Length: 427
Image 1 (spheres, rainbow, N blue to C red):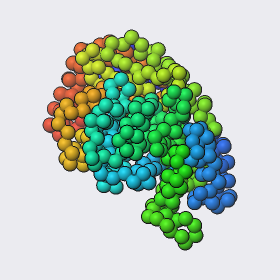
Image 2: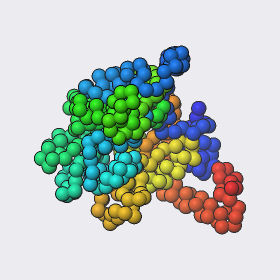
Image 3: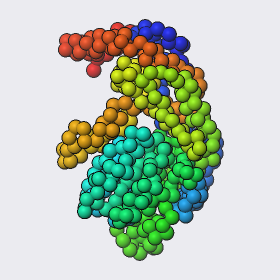
Image 4: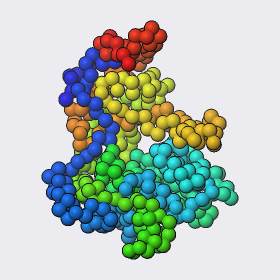
């Protein structure tokens, strides 16, 4: 529920007005689907007393995901990070693997965890995805593979990466955490490269509470990963290779199936919200709303703004501060870039300017709340606040500087931090 229109700067919560939303509105708040159907499935799991170990719901979930992706094999896992790790190990990646720095840290960690060095690559500013030209320049005799990331569900330059991998004898894996139920040139994302990895984390538009999967058309690779996710067991008391515990539980699969049942409805809500944001923010100088290709299938689970500080007169972080005060928990995404996070910042220092597109992007991008927990009234209220801030950049900057100075002075006196309406927060 919103608190009413925000027409003046004094109406903004950061300057003393009431927050636009009584409760925090998060990016990626979980979609639930049909609760009664979910509970029916969970009760069935309990009645069967078959909670894990390749139960009927996991098998059904794998089948439905494979069918949607248009592939022969889906190997469900306990989460997307473990799915990445098992795919990397099954592909026998070693030495160096080229990845974008503009990705979630799990993409890099999944490599480093197995002592494979991630080599960070810049992105194409037109797509926010890994730049094949930069990939080619980064290949060395130690390179064994490439991991492309379909950021925002928009596909990488798939054909160029596949051609490059073939020519240079490299394995090609795609992190498709954002791209479930999206397509590229009419073909579903999930069927490219050697394999692709989905995330079904709670924040994804289709979730299994926690979960992930690897999809592939390579039967031998799929069989290898099935062994690896179950300690290497090939039958009762018959361990044939090293493995770990990457299995998805039946309750997680029950949630996944329930979300799949509602997939079209969730996508329709995502699209409705996305288009309302696009209409409401159209024409704002220095504010670009990420565009999707209408000729492809999209899940619309991300509403992304790029704030050009020079044109808008306000920085992305200043806008985020205003939105957070309104309980609109907009997110900087992939900030500050994997190459600026530990241990990579210390082990593999990248001089400033070596990844210029990534370094610019991480300062511009923010994601707004959407999904089934956000209605059109909420979108309208968020649009109104963004427009108010961007229409008054100088005044907003001045008032934020006053607020920041007051905060520093209060902290210096030991008084705590000034809060909304002039109150002081302690502790």
